[in-house]
Length: 267
Image (cartoon, rainbow, N blue to C red; front, top):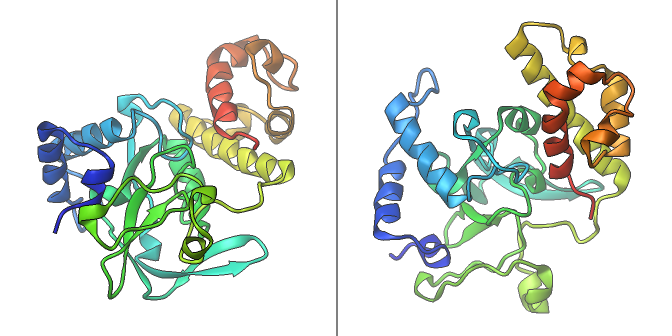
């Protein structure tokens, strides 16, 4: 059977061979760690596929910072979807089966983005909406794929597969009824976005504190992070005005903060 993803995302002969290699590799079952040489080749393929961007924040990703992570968290290896007031959530079930270590269910991400995501049950946070959608799971009993993060129509005929539609407006009303997961039809409020950015900033602070071997509050205080999340400075000069950021911290963390803030965009 032809691979639908190869039809939707053209690969050269070299990239096909590289992907074939990645499909046969797994982390160690007891430690969960990749063999260093295997990891290097897996990261190389995933960075090429995602244009060297983090799958969670869509910002540029340096090679040494790349963390291999599952788009569908391992906690949800077998799952269904359930709607509630907060939108779609993953629940225990057997309708969809995660592809686990398959390369289409892997992405590279910043360490702090990976920590912030955790095992969230919100499928809209499994991959950034600006990133190319991936067939991350298979539906039990039929040859269809679950594409994350955008609304898509999955083809059951791989020979006729095309790149998935990138917006709900591209689907007919009948097809919209078949959509299993994708963007919420109502954009998030600024309050929700502020809370999301605050979680990412706190995860970044925790990562930095561990690197330096210091308490988290010595990096930036909670008050500073809250002001950053609410004011969303766009330039270095704007960060200077935030409480608790002096010249030394501005020089050390200013660019990181701008990158994080620009990665959580309001609609």
